[in-house]
Image (cartoon, rainbow, N blue to C red; front, side, top):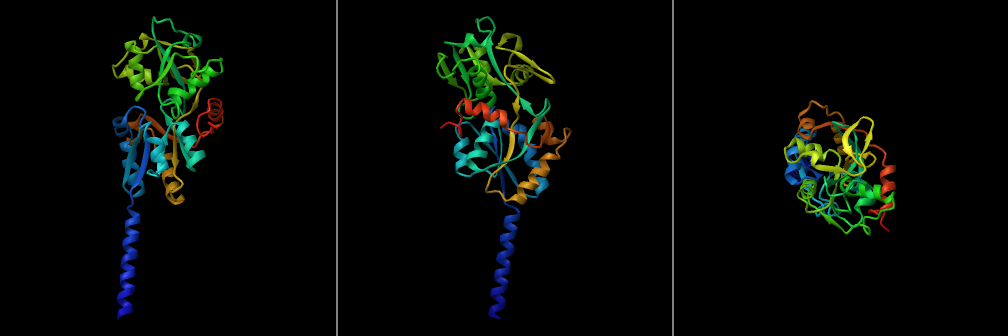
Length: 292
């Protein structure tokens, strides 16, 4: 009788463990480039979709520039949706695996933009020397620092030496508005920001000058730099391969007309895009993990 009770106890404990594991919460860290509230607005439907597909609760974790690296080091997320610089960093240093690349309405690549207020005399790269410029975090920002810094580097301009100052803003919206108000001379932002903010009624694009503006076939947004891969969806090394594969399958089958895609204004995701050109820029600018 005692053996039966022990066996029954072990069975119940095992079933409880399996049940708990089956409903374990999945935590997705998301780069909060436009603030934490914007993460919730854009990506909550993706979390709902994945929760439905996997049969497990999914929680979004907005990651600011200040909290990003700490959260990764503390292993607080199972998956990560982040800009390409952040993604390369965690891939190389923390063992994350690329699952997919974001496919926006304009495709799976984006660029950097250098903006100045119309009439302040800044029209080309060399005009930035001795000027006050604002970007996002130089250690982790892609479209709001690295792309522009590398663009200027190729023209012999060192953003760490040749500018009067390089200040850091918390949100890309703030950078645009600072230029508009004349608080700073120029700013580094990602492609698509100006168009988005004009649509939101916050600015008029005609009030700005685009430094070294170029055109690229089939790319509709104003931009300064060459194109680089969009954000990556990656899996933490602590995430088991079975779950990672399920998530990859789920996000790759997202269609443009789905709720998840509509809320984030994307078409979905594609297979991971090669990062060779991106790594070249990161190495030239000594961005971690290539800063030694």
